[in-house]
Length: 148
Image 1 (spheres, one colour):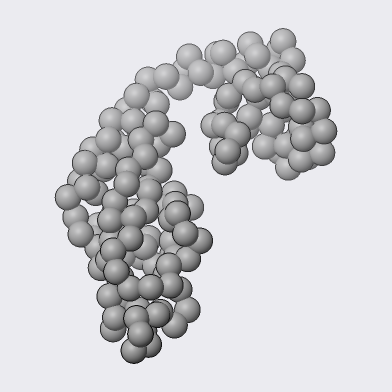
Image 2 (image 1 turned 90 degrees about the horizontal axis):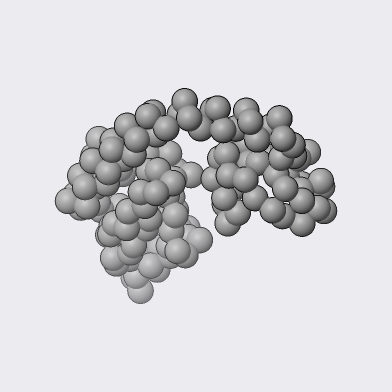
């Protein structure tokens, strides 16, 4: 089934992508959740016009994202957590704490833009996360979890 995405869908595509997916996935999930619409000829014309108008704006957003990405590579982040004597963290460190630490450094990053390979970090030490500033600008950065 031919669809047009209305929002970014992880592991599928970005907003305004024209995709072919299985009809059950489209009818039972994407369309009812308002994540996609059917790609009719009129919808494709509207999409083409919207993309033409949005091209300049996207270039500007991408440039800003690249600048933020370069700044993010230069900073170091440490997150304090309560730990046991063996180095295990009570609870875990997740994208919320990473977003708060970035906010303290002057970066306004939504927690949904931060991707940590592990679901939650449960040990002290250095870890890596990805920040998705733009659909084409994804930055890896390291942060350190220390004992409080």
